[in-house]
Structure formats: C-alpha cells, structure tokens
Image (cartoon, rainbow, N blue to C red; front, side, top):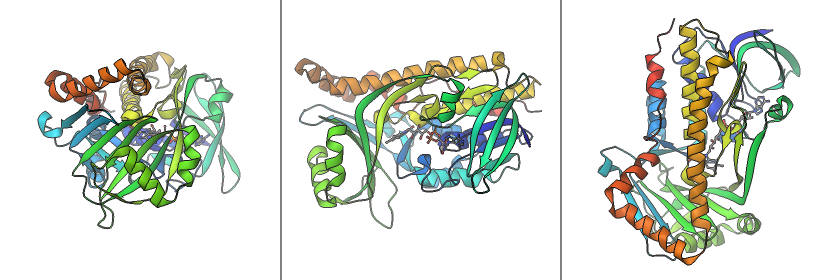
Length: 415
Ligand SMILES: Cc1cc2nc3c(=O)[nH]c(=O)nc-3n(C[C@H](O)[C@H](O)[C@H](O)COP(=O)(O)OP(=O)(O)OC[C@H]3O[C@@H](n4cnc5c(N)ncnc54)[C@H](O)[C@@H]3O)c2cc1C
C-alpha cells in the first residue's frame, strides 16, 4: 500500500509540471504520480509531434521551479509576431525589441519538453512515478482519498491513500465520469492539422498567424534540425477537408499550404509527419472538491489559435502548488475544501478570461460579413500602428497581464 500526501493522476505536460512545481520547493512532501502510458513515450498524448508556444510568464514559472536553465537550449525564441488575413490588405506586426524583452514567447517541441520534464522528475526522491499504471478507481473518506492503481506491466493492483488527489488526466477522462465531474463542451467542427515544415530560408524568429477562410494557419519558429530551417505548422481545417488534406502527397500538401499561407517564409521544401486534433472548448463544472483538484485539459480545453492551453494550465499548476506549499508550511490540511477554495476561484477567473479571448478570436475571424471583415482588418492595422492597443495585446500574448502566482512559489516559507 502507498501512503502519500499528493496523488497526481496523469503524467502529461501538466501532471509532470505540477509534480515539479511541488518537489522543487519541498523535498519532504510525498508525491505519487501515475501515468498510464509508458513514461514520456511516443504514444503519450502530451509528448507527441506537436510544438508548444511558451509565454514569457511560463518561462518565468519554469525558472521559478529551477527548470528554465534545462529548457532554454530547447526553445526557439519568438522575436516577431505577424498576423494577417488571406486576401485582405491589413496586417499587424509585433517586435520583442519594442517591449524591451528578449522574446515574445518561446516555441518548444513537446517531445523535447516531455523528455526534459521526465529527466527532472528523477532528481527528486520524494516523487514516486508509477508508469505504465492507471488509476482505476477513487473513493473519498474524511481524512484521505483511496485510489486503486493498476500497474499495467505486472497486472498488479496497489492501493494508495492520499491527502489530496490532483486530476491531470486530460480532456477525455474516464475517472471524471465515474466521479460525476461534469463539464460543458462545444465542438468547433474543426481540427488542428499539425506538421513540421522545412523552409527554404530561416524564419529569423518570426511567428505567423494567417487567418484563412477555414480558420487560422500558424507557423511557429522552431530550432533548426540537422541544419534544416523549420517552422511548426498548426493548420485549422474544417472536418470536411481533413481526409483530403491528410491523403495529399507531400508535394501536393506543400503546394496547397503555400497557396493558403503565401511566401512570407519563402518556399516550403519539405513536410514531416502529419497529425490532427479535433478542436473543442470545454470547461469542468468543478475545479475542486474535498481532497480533490482538477488541472490542465481535465479542467479546461481551448482552441489552440492563441497557443494558451498549456500556459493557462501551468499557471493553474503553479497556483495550486503555491496553495499546497503554503498550507503545508502552516501545518494546515492540504485537502480541506476551505483551503482549496482560493485556488479554484483564481483559476476559474483566469480560465474564463482566456477561453473567452481564444473563442472570441476564432469567432471574429470566421464570420464572413463584409463590414466585420473590414473592422477586423482595421483592428489588425490599429494593432500595428497604435502603441497602446499593441501594448495590451502584446502583454496578453506574452502572458504578462495575468495574475501571477508564480513569483510567490519562492516566497513560501517551508517547514
Ligand atoms: C494542436 C494543438 C496545439 C497546441 N498548442 C499550444 C501552444 O502553443 N501553447 C499552449 O499553451 N498550449 C497549446 N496546446 C494545448 C496543450 O497541448 C494542452 O494544454 C496540454 O497538452 C494539456 O496537457 P494535460 O497534461 O492536461 O493533458 P494530456 O496531454 O491529455 O495528458 C493527460 C495524461 O493523463 C494520462 N491519464 C489519463 N487517464 C489516466 C488514468 N486514469 N491514470 C493514469 N494516467 C492517466 C494520459 O495517458 C495522459 O498522458 C495545443 C493543443 C493542441 C491540440
């Protein structure tokens, strides 16, 4: 039987980051993380061929956990952001140098990020990692949660008692259903088609977001691989065009992409493996219960148009870690509902704000009426020429306009 302070269900990007946020600040707290897919393997959903834009505030959070020095050589800095709409004259440009920052954000490939997070987990003796293993049931008692954990290689079940359970098990959780954790979801009838694109010329740190008829096309700067310049493509595609685009030869796929995106990045020379993700907006109706908290995609899923899902989740992970560390330092019960309430309230506000902003961006650019199209272009141009509008947009893009629990992680006085 395992007895632990915190049981983390799911070791994806969010579960692993949360474990590190806790352990990097308290090496006494017992943490057990259970991940059903072989740790950081190819088939794990968090660590696939996608890339993630990390905001400045996420970089600060990782620095606060002592991780940024291990991640900084894996990321490509975004020096410039360019947004435009296909067939329209408006565009906007943002430059890191105008905001006195080294970068507007950083792009990292999920596999590299996952490998590094798992390497860091091994540094902490107070983290017990069970993988491949699955939490199959959860039952709450007054003093603890009781979990059944199935170790998949041995087909052996272990019992675990935890003072706090943190659900980081993604947006399609079986356990949430069993626990009656309901959520609201809206499907966009769109998918994000992703692939790495080899470029004729270097991207020079430019990130592009181009609003085409079916949805936005993002091209994000990546570190060169084997001397080849690359950008990560996130192509929002209607479900009806998906099969056709997936079936195209590499040559035809690049020709179609080039026609939609244009030549700002020069000629596209090659395309890596293509994958796709159905898009939805989803929010759990509860973020906390007695002895239970929900983080990451299990709590909120959003359209990747603004690249904010993981950034939002990392802020939530840091906020919850701060809460647990502060209550531990004060000798309070980390699982008591009253002690989790402030986390839930702040995270809910942040999630609502970010979801509304991402959804608003998707809706505004998918509405086809002419005056609205003009207004959109105007807004794009104002963004390029009006320092005030640009300033607030840029701060939001960098994740710097939000409540930051992170800086306080270091300020907790640990016992
Ligand atoms: C195309 C695309 C691009 C994106 N780009 C960005 C971006 O640029 N910036 C950004 O901030 N965000 C981005 N996101 C969002 C980001 O990918 C998600 O926020 C992030 O992956 C959520 O991670 P998670 O750990 O919560 O969930 P998941 O990745 O789903 O991980 C959940 C884990 O839990 C495990 N699990 C499930 N059930 C159990 C169980 N019972 N027992 C044990 N383990 C279990 C699963 O195996 C899995 O490993 C993007 C998303 C998409 C689709």
